[in-house]
Image 1 (cartoon, one colour):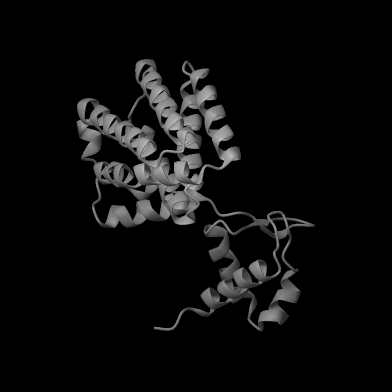
Image 2: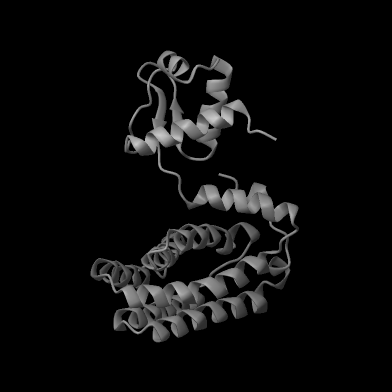
Length: 241
């Protein structure tokens, strides 16, 4: 079955954005000009733009000087799509944690072996910020997300970066009622420090083992305190952007 005309136009717009190296904040041409360029009707063009807006590629600003403005898709859009697919597949929360258990140790190994100096500094700064934010739950969760994001992207594999960061939006578990008391936050901070030391050493195996232990300990915490949530089927409404 051929793709809808609006989908084809959306794909052409994305290609032009990339070909012209347009950056977030750039405006697309006025509607009249785009109608001529793509030789389509107004409804088809607007549907194409709406598709791109839902994917996080652009935002439609109303009023004078508004119109379609380029944005940057992020992992939350992927997390929303994954949650939708998982709901139809009756996927429990446990499955997402198990996936992270397999992927994250590998990213830590790659991160250590590639040893980017700027990344190492960012990781250490993240560990330090978490250590000073143990009494602030929201700040802790933000820093937890940031650390795992840095490790994933530090693997220099964009698929790991997008996949793991999107999974992390789901596995923090807060929408399911999972809590992180201070004593557990401290354990997470210590685990991050061990992973960071492993990555700083440049020894892939050391970093991988530290991350695997961190993931195993997290699973054990959830199993011990949140058995009901572990078996709960994920739903799109929990994570829709």
